Amino acid sequence: MKSIPLLGAGRAVAVLAAAFALIPAAAQVNLAGQWTGMYHEDFPDRLPGPELGDYGGLPLNDANRMRAEAWSASILSLPLYQCRVHPVDYAASFAQIRIWETVNPDTQQLAAIHIQHFAWGTIRTIWMDGRDHPPDYAQHSAMGFSTGEFIGQTLRVRTTHLKEGWLRRNGVARSWNATVTEHFTRREDILTWHVYIEDPAYLEEPFFRNRDYVLNPTGRMGPYPCESVIETDMPENYFPHYLPGQNPYLREFGINHGIPYEATRGGAATMYPEYVETIRQMPPPEAPAQ
Amino acid sequence: MNRAARTGRPRTRHLACACLAGLAAATAMPAGKLQAQQQDFSSVEISTLQVTENVYMLVGAGGNVTVQVGDDGVFIVDTQFAPLSDKIAAAIAEISDLPIRYIVNTHHHGDHIGGNANLRAVGSTVTGGNMPGPVPYAGGGAQVIAHENVILRLSAPGGDQAVSSTLWPTNTFFDDEKRLYFNAEGIRIIHQPRAHTDGDVIVFFRKSDVIAVGDVFSTTNYPVLDLNGGGSYRGVIDALNTIVDLIIPVYGQDGGTLVVPGHGRLSGLGDVLDYREMVLVIHDRLRYMIESGMTLEQVKAAGPTRDYDPVYGATEGFWTTERFVEAAYASLSEQIRGEQ
Image (cartoon, rainbow over all chains, first blue to last red; front, top):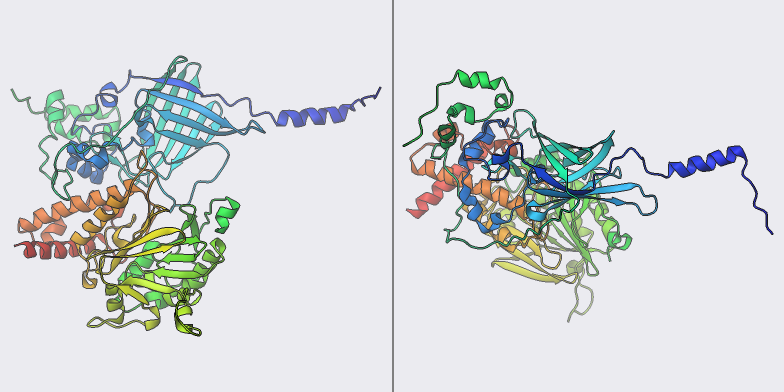
């Protein structure tokens, strides 16, 4: 019978230390699962959609306001615009998201986290392997290029290489040179998503918003097909928009909700609670048409 | 097979980019003059971005260079500036060890044709047929293909000053399109009349599904309307429509046909649509203002581009927002007069 040599105490410690070193950091929370959106915040904005001319609470600058005021909802009738997906900093506002991980099969180290959005069925990848972001001249996309790291129990994600997108579905733009920082925090069966958008082109200040989700162990993501169709005959080079000063719908929101027009036009000041006092000093809005 | 395909590694390297500076320097001068003498290129590096299996985008100073490689050799679109030719040739040599066979110029500006002579010299044309003996001239360099209006501009009949004939294209065409089959794919070289200039072409690699479009589309600036070089606002719209028509995107518009712009980042349908949207919206505003009788100064004061300025505008350098509005006003005024 062959004898098995015993390890010396020091050697055993070394082997155990090496073994534990191969175990992924136990502190990393697992976000995987099907998560259903909770709509106790911002429901009208998130599902029915924002009203025309409502820019309140958005730190948009003058250039962005001008773009928004030129925007026409008829853009959605253009075949090439019908299947445009929501950008990564907006897509998770709707319904479910599904999160799963990719690990290195040899080391079991976390390589990437993936998130599928119900809206448009888009899938993003958050690289967790320490890779660099691509150079500026690489292609941009709706999902952008994301890298992440765990800060305690919170996943922090930095996203660059975004295509132009939108902050709200009524023409408020977010430019392609914006950067997005997100935090995903799980507390048992509740997941909170914080989004922090820096856009020197179109925002006076960074824009922040958050959404909450509840774990849904039996949830399944439905398909989200989209096929462009020609809905109406259009002249050559037609692109729907309003010329400056000619959009007739900009005051409707304020009139219908009793909000002074100036307060609907957005800007950094409108994000803060003290702006309520400013609104109180404004002339009352026009009366709704009978 | 190209080296990246052999190794299976995507190719991306960093560089110092002076893209728009190069564009500015190039287009600020008459067609016949190249500003390369005035610009320091010593710190410029050439970076390589793999676009598809056989197509690469080289970024340096001046217009982006598109490189298609395969068993037949190397096919490139545009050549940036002459002082960068050694670096560009070195970057190409890292992709393929076969010679450059074809060069296409998307138009006549110096930041796109400056390296013609140098890169042609390191290439060679395949010759043969019923040709007894050597054909040293024909085989002595790569072919340089361009629309006929490019050589008319470079040789300057009636223009400012001709550039050295070593920079001229060696193979021009005057109809709507020239077609080649090279490296196992069809290549369409499609003329875009009166767009950025009157000699613009876009190059569509059909199998690779990549379009190199020159300066009719850039992600970094308003359209450069070289009116003295035969460009027009309407032609830029038409060229963008042509590009959009050629693109078949994947779901979500982030893949499928890819576009190498004259300047700026690798693009897809969404980027071209965003750019065309800007061009169309500003077109409509300017046209409305011109037809309302507004003078150029009144138009400038009205700020018709204010919403797009943070993305495409410039207050200094060659192609400022003010110059764009001036050129657009002039081009659209001419168009409206022609319609009356």
